[in-house]
Length: 290
Image (cartoon, rainbow, N blue to C red):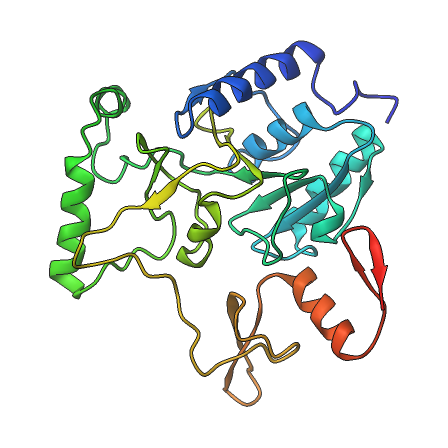
């Protein structure tokens, strides 16, 4: 820890990133450019989210890192270890115990509070990239609020498949102004962004962009009057471990039997439910509950 400046980044870099965060919070959904630094992980593996986390973390924070809802993946473990070694702050796998949660493509199942910050790792921040390759042109389209090409993309999706089939990175309107890419979270998580108590920060290191959704902000998915936004439905299936029917479920293929089973994507949530069902003590929001 003594070999590095606190939280790895130099103080001027952290000040620049915090200024970009303040501007992003002041203009919800607007992509603020920043000078993305080289990190000891490859670009595309969460450098943007990591820079945001290291710029806002303090000595009294408790940090949780998840990858697709899992606390134990290689990406989550390595980022968590880097944060531990360069800050010395406490880390946890308990969603409600953490003050800062860095996530790759999931929002935790447990309802987060106003004291928490959720930091997203973002690979592609521009929602118009699918319909317009020019960065200069997308800037102009955002400025003029010209999102017609994106609406045409949704229409073509309906004509081809009979419904909107976008599974992740579903475009949303933030504060009735900017259309935003919510990172590759599944559609299941998109409603959690609307009028949430938590501050959401999005960091794209490779694209050098930071944007934010402040607490109690309207976040509305793009939808037509006759083709409404729908999140994934897991009818008739449940988690094979905790038997949850309301959480986001991952498919697990059993090579021996050839059967497909399902388990909770959020490993912390699943473990809590299993412990509660077994009558074990569970840590909830920093307090033990029997």
